[in-house]
Picture 1 (cartoon, rainbow, N blue to C red):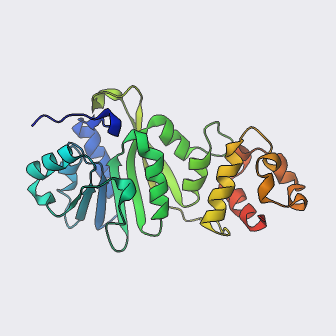
Picture 2 (cartoon, helix red, strand yellow):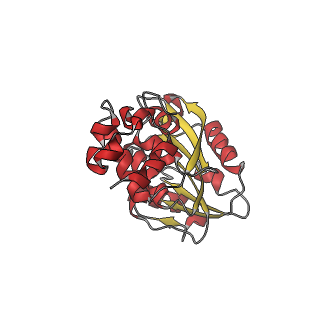
Picture 3 (tube, rainbow, N blue to C red):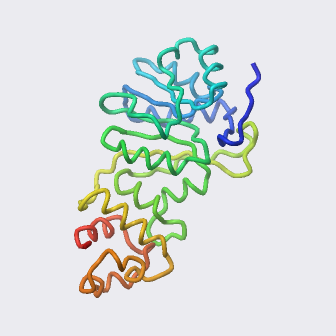
Length: 251
């Protein structure tokens, strides 16, 4: 059965078995019992994941044609494949679970924000991203690509940049390099007023990242607070802990 690629869904099928094995190896470095694959597509990764012993497995795939193909090719997926967009699903398991996938590039940031919504349950993510997105997620303070995604993810997860994947490993080859990263729950999640305050502050600060912080976040703080020398810095100069601490001082 020939699979039709849909550009609108950001589909690039992984066809390199060694890369698939490397992803599975990275996933297995931390024990887990429940696993969700996002966007199994043509099943390149799925066929390896289904061989993992004693794992409760589910996949979520939005493309009807791919769902039919997967069910025909891997009958054991009956009852375990959710025909939905990942962005619309509820947590597919009770208790902790891991997530793996060659993530569709057009929704990769939204996938990360969904993971953050589920942070109490998601104990590991091993995912393929466009390289520039992976670099952004892993970027330290002061880096040119350090931004909203870096801060929001790193507040709750430690980010490991695992390896790059060249375009030739996909069909069709994307025009960009890809990279695999792993997220594990952070052992140093900072105290914050609330996740909502934190997200608002970070997004507001980076919305005008070239400005001094006091100008970018003016509506969120009193004039007395804004006199603090910390507010003379730019958003990219603040650490995750700096942002979390500031949430307690917001109006």
